[in-house]
Length: 88
Image 1 (cartoon, rainbow, N blue to C red):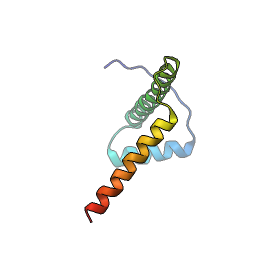
Image 2: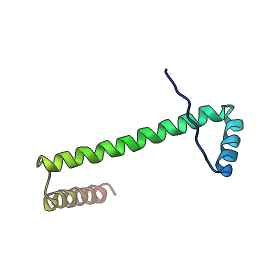
Image 3: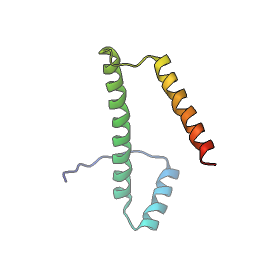
């Protein structure tokens, strides 16, 4: 895996907590910070891509009207209630 070096500033309290995690997990601060940044980047990128896909769907007319969605949701909820009552 290719890697690069980054320098970041964090509050002292964050660094201290990272130290505690490093000791507790027997990992380096650098490794932990890299894992945290990687997880953050993946999560945020997924959110951004989902929003962009949603906007593209709207622009292309790939949408379901609100009243249709609500009717389907109500039907699912009603069926779940009936199933629950039948299983009691």
